[in-house]
Length: 405
Image (tube, rainbow, N blue to C red; front, side, top):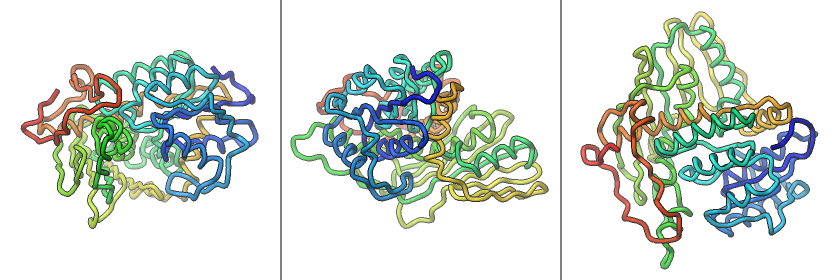
């Protein structure tokens, strides 16, 4: 394990897609006065790994979660023998001298990768969500507790918790600026990608689904879990609690391919009878909304990715925040170098389970309790064996018919 101080920090990337590559650009910028290098890479597919390396070496344009850059070549120390491929590539990477690992594979793999990283004594940055089912959440919770015992830093890709105006306004809520919270609502309504790519002839179901992972629930958790978890996390953060139950509905109006839905509406009940409404939709041609709203007895708070304000006697409007995708890595690296472990594992596990029980309720048409899901649900979406083979046919969930497991 990396000892606190100013020595060279070695990073390993597990999952070399766009988000993982973007996270590397941020961690390599997070401590400009102290050395950080990319030491090892792992991915299921050789072509994805090499494309990631070439992008890091050759530069890329900016996008919503990544600034443009010319090259990180001076910080790349990844010879061929530290480029691992296959289902066990993550284990091979964890056997190297890396100090910090970035977990950015499709979310279905996250629990087992996180568990292995903590057992190997590595600091962790893991993208959200951290699981797609209750079985995975239980693994993450246990590993997060083990990480705390070992003094390991664990940061999650819930970057709003590192975004200046979110931090300011949530702190004001906790300090009583809007009084007692009585209700909340959160939204991620946007276009999304609705059409799964066709499987090439001769390719196994496993390879095709892993390459085009988003529309497959066992890999992504559906968009309520993979994307809307950001907004749900803000509600948990503001209320300083997780819900006690979920009652949801939704469906699949226009999406084609895969087995996930394109819209959800969930009512969460929190301790004290507080209700929070959760809405997410991926349908083009509709009004977009990505935000959170918290209502109290003496005011309300409104937040989104670019701004936030409080209405009421303690009115407040935030200034624009620095890049939160970079800030979360700055905070993580600082915690490692100062020897003051940051651990966001439990919070992101709870937010992931909040989204999961909403999906489970909507898929089945049944109300789902938190305690039952966490402690008794048998739902485990991971295939029994990870190998390139054909899989059972995809079945689109139908409320009233899909069983609650």
